[in-house]
Length: 407
Ligand SMILES: [Zn+2]
Image (cartoon, rainbow, N blue to C red; front, side, top):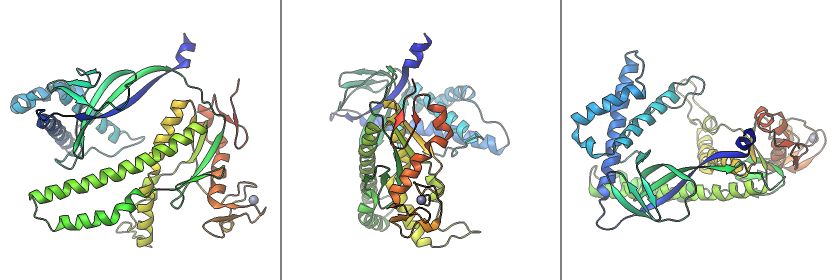
């Protein structure tokens, strides 16, 4: 019995498809649903904020639901929207506030949703039906979608959202799958950079695509054009839409690039070691604060933009779940001094880096590409990382480049 629990794992996966409409389809209804969910979110959030300002406790989800009944009486248009979606909205808000007030790892406090600015979306926790190439959405009806892949597992919920000019559904499924065993036995360390996106300890590397930089002139021109347009005019709306589409294309291109790299890495290596970089802290405003203004503002903000354009944070997330899926492991190690430490003798000195590219150890004379050396240092730190020891019932790094599975 116990064995079967350990040999199986519950996995959740999202399947995203674009909805496919006929001319007769009532797309305005989807907008209306999303708008009402936004309305309920904002109303509930305003109430919670007011309570906090008055020094009271926030209302729990259970205390909020009777309010929803009241609001439905007051605002009859809410009755046309699936109730489950409105309830879900309150649940999401409840979760977001709890996360924000959690002292151990506080997250950002939820904000009001703005029309046209926030993502238009709503979720069905139940009541929907998926059948071949169509989906039934309560209070909306059947809709077809572009089925680009097979859906695996049992659908648990579906989110409908507008991105650019198209509506999408994201079906989240759950299934029990046998715990995977990674087919490879190799381990690799990675070093992030802005010249090379990522350098591996085996000497290979991947270049960035700089999706944002590539289109920055085009974006700046579009923004300038927008600034000259009359507020509220139809042309301005159009221009806003085209700017939004450029941003969508940029992030799609970046994500695609990261997906390919992390796919390859997770396929070829059972253990991938990464620096535990805090991208948020690294890219703090170059201008600094009023009390502590920053120096080198220009260079720093250029670097910030370059770092954010790489999508290191996304890289970490993608790699982590891909490794988990394959039965491998992504390990995050302490990033301090990885660029100054010698991977052969461990000597740490800023003089070890005569140039940006070159690593030359002052003690043992080890010479190598600086990024490659750093990647090797990252890999060597795996053993000292608590989360690695804890999780590594199955994966124990023995020597650089290999790992063994204890019997
Ligand atoms: Zn050395």
